Image (spheres, one colour):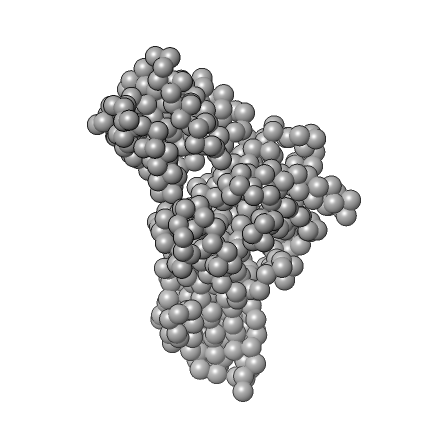
Length: 164
Length: 198
Length: 124
């Protein structure tokens, strides 16, 4: 039996308790999941924005997962505190959907895409391999990230489960 | 913002919602009641808990972003059944089995007319503000995930948001829709300062 | 009884184009053309050379104000009637100053639109 740890919009959770599953619902936000498979430390951030509008994420957002770059750094720091090694960490992500469409076209409301792009860029920069992703489209996703196995399960309504 | 200011803001927003209700009534040729619930300030992640909607429940939503002298995220949502019924009436069709592309266009345009139109028209008239509306976006999905785009837009540089929740009800048909108005604290203060009876 | 007036209906909402077309056809305007955004409106204007245009404002890409400006640059005698949900003072003023000949606010009665169009057609 596992215990669910809910991650709020803009939130972060890190765990090394193998009975826990980190979980969040995402639409245009991205559930960024980092895992150290040796130390079995998992982290999940619910990322809302690539960066603040003036190009620099402001300090002092109480929400550690809100901005992409801060989220990655916060996750790495918090995971290291629980025994994770940066060199062993791998990433998975899900979300980044264009939820709203205008007359059938979803290009107008595209913050989802931009979040995913920025995260890929930052992960590349930090040398963290992105091993799988389920990004884009136009639907919400329920994500469950296992601390025990590092598996990311994505549930989409009317479409069942995907295991990343 | 203190309690008194929030209450005053609620009255102000309620008056703009009243204009939206009037328009909705014209569209459907029916009386529309409107009620604004309490206006609150909170950290954005608390939004889903404070709003009268089930997070995982599938809803039809129209999103309009307003920008200019004030930034607003306006989310109109209703059950899929109600959306089908209203779309059928707008299209003059008998059955409301499925929400077709034209039906979705009708619902989005309804949102455009009452929110990008009447709501913002009333706001502009009372404050002198220029507010440009986005084209309306339409979605059918879990409420909680549809809350993200307006939250992202309004809370991009603030963690605190002001939210007002209003209900519009077509009186004879007993069909309701919820309107969420989300603002950042700076915008809310500007509105309070500049609103002029209207 | 159909007239020979060519109308160009510009609105991003398929629903609104359908409604306006129905209203026009029921009122004798059988030659109805459509455009779904400002850029398409300009292209259609050049192609079709309509007698009158109904112009929405909130549209993706080029909006109705910009399209009105562009069309009037091509044809200073273009007859454009704004048909929009927006009634903010600065927007109405800009449309009129640019040369729109009429302004109808949604939601509208069918008769209001028809009267607005006929008024403009008669006065020129």
